[in-house]
Length: 271
Image 1: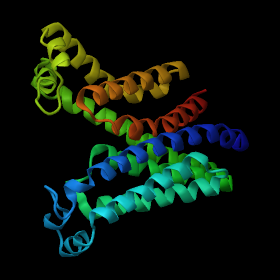
Image 2: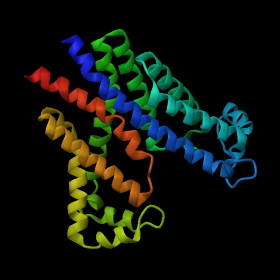
Image 3: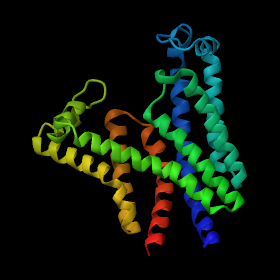
Image 4: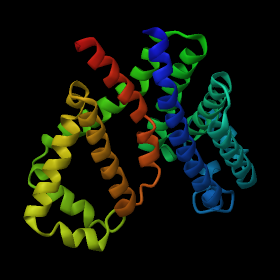
């Protein structure tokens, strides 16, 4: 059983590393392109941002060129994740990515951290733990890593769904229509679609129930779990297109392999 589970987990974790590499590349490219905005002569220079004294001193030394070199190194780490030939090399790449991007988020905090960054860091940690389990042959450690990544995804979806269900504006479809019509986050063609109350209402309830009840998919058959994950991935792709949140799909989909493994373990425990 132990050997079978560890063998089953390897392709799942390899898929997680591919998604993490794509997310890290996109996140790093975003900062390479936008470095001028945060440089000394930019619109939002890091050196002028408020924060703790240590953070402020360090940010003063973070020049535009240094920021670009830092992010270029993260792109190299992402390539490393794609081509790591052994579990220990993969673990080293995951830890390097976690330390590098985690340090960047720690340094700049609320000014740069997005939901995709936070999710990506959590999945990096969980995947590193699970991949270490493959290297040493420890199923308990594998479960721990899957719970970090997959468990966080379940919590994110469920909390997002239930928090929306508590809001009358979401239940009526008005909130979704407002988001689609927003000058920054919306899109004209999407706003026209949700002007129809039935479309806004149906889309809102589908999203709310899909998120709130997502953990129940673990207890169905594998096809049901795959369908639920595919639906949520479709939602992330839609938000990437409409709201230009291009990093979110890959940060969240990197946790999908862990959810599939958790589903495998739950079904095994119930059978």
